[in-house]
Length: 114
Length: 113
Image (cartoon, rainbow over the protein chains, first blue to last red):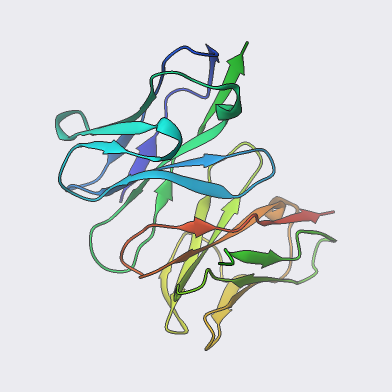
């Protein structure tokens, strides 16, 4: 069964600083990988996805993520954080082929301080 | 282009009651998945509907059931409500069932007293 681990429950960064959110997955082969963002009281919005090809994936709002097969990781990065980036971020994994059962991690809450 | 819409946005029920939540997928999407998100947790997969049939199911009891209509909209039904069913219920649609790329609604907040 697939699973996702987000080791950081809460992260605080200063506005303008760089950001890296960690994600490790467990799956028998190369999975589909996703990052979603959730603002308070809202649904989730897809930031970026990895299906195949280039292991560095660009997303919306200036985010990027790198798939590292050897480390079973898919960390999310942003070079300069804005106050509006404060939200909860979820990494998710899906199996290749067939009907999807996307599995989410427990999330990392990002706080941005001025 | 309307996104995923869910109703109601908030509701309060008592233990033992039944609830029905509704979802209209994004235009052009034919696959609907339902997730339960408890406070402070990540979304947990309940089930996925495609072509009016349940295609995948997570680890939820039979009290949780669903339906998909010919227009691709969907309902989630929960019977015999427990206090632990209090959560945000999220509907997500996909352009195809195998992609895993989910477009979420804003959810229905269920409180069970």
